[in-house]
Length: 143
Image (cartoon, rainbow, N blue to C red; front, side):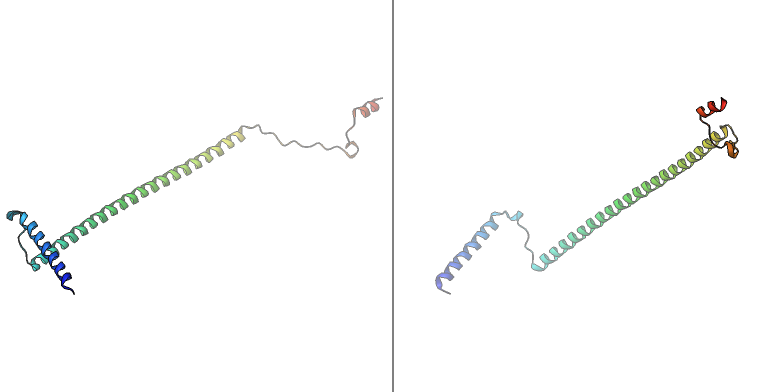
């Protein structure tokens, strides 16, 4: 690598470091976080992740419980609706049976109220008197 490139990188790095140091020093000492070593930082992150996972798991369980409760409510409502529908159908069938019974009673009563006439017997004519006679023929016969 050329000296110019190395020099440029070195100056950029020193500038970055100085800016970072200036920013760090601009914060008052009591507001600065305490320095932590890598192990403690990793342990802390791991605990935070575990706590976040536990909270997410708890939220999932709560949501699952709410969903199951809603499902049970819907099932309960459906059972109640089915029961009411069955009762309605049963009542309709009962009413239909009552109406048919009343109709049968009314028909029987009507039949009993009709005058009883014996079936009319057809009068039979003898062979020679089988045909009807017209009025003209009747007048002719009378002459």
